Image 1 (cartoon, rainbow, N blue to C red):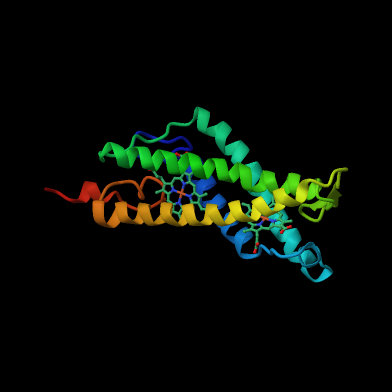
Image 2: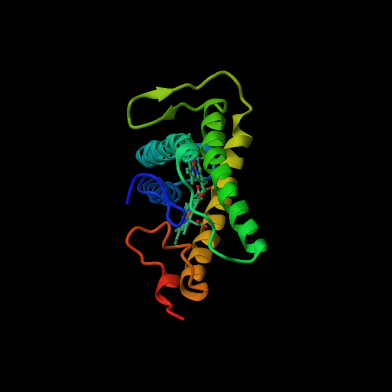
Amino acid sequence: MSLSGTTTRYGRLAQAFHWLTALLVLIAFLVSAGGPPERVYSAARASTLLLHESLGFTVFCLLVVRLIWRRFDRIPDAPAMPSWMEVASKATHWALYALLFAVPATAMVGALFGGHPVTVYGLGAIGPFSGSWGAPLAEIHGTLGDVMMWIAGLHAAAAIFHHFFLRDRVLSQMLPGLPDPSSRQGG
Ligand code: HEM
Ligand code: HEM
């Protein structure tokens, strides 16, 4: 399989971006902390906050490179399905892309303009910048993070439904090594 996709499969690079992003988002979510700033920015939570911000920042960078690559890549055609399902699937994908942008962006802008430096990879801190309007954005960040996990969960459930019940190639075109169930039906 080449780096680029075909009419029936995502390419190696698009698959790598997808699964790496899903893994990093999941870990960032699991180590996230809410509550009052004294808790979020406490010394006891400094290392998990560093991990959370570094993972989230990596997700953001991956999104930028991934979307540039997508312009040059061949995205597989949707297998035969009702048009409402195809529209719902495209809408979900673009909602997830929007959230992959909005979740880290609201966090970074919210922290920087809410009086908190942002630390990534332990390389030192950026900011904070002057302004005090960041706190509501930080709250929106937490809510959007939850929304992203719900949509990603439904998206994953839909992919599994396609594979086992509709028996089309939706999951196999993104998952390396998984055979296309529709090519094994044989009438
Ligand atoms: C895909 C990436 C990310 C996901 C899924 C995510 C998810 C979350 C969630 C769900 C919360 C709220 C936790 C709760 O209320 O229990 C949260 C809080 C937080 N996140 Fe993220 N986050 C991501 C990226 C980032 C990035 C890039 C930063 C860097 C600035 C960041 C900084 C924070 C901070 C500072 C809080 C605490 C907010 C507050 O209540 O003041 N996050 N995150
Ligand atoms: C945080 C987690 C996830 C995010 C943010 C995410 C995001 C995305 C996005 C944006 C696309 C569109 C790709 C494109 O056409 O450019 C996509 C496709 C896909 N994702 Fe996910 N995904 C996540 C988790 C999962 C999981 C857990 C599964 C499977 C169990 C999965 C299965 C798929 C499949 C099969 C496709 C291709 C769908 C199609 O071609 O119609 N994803 N995902």
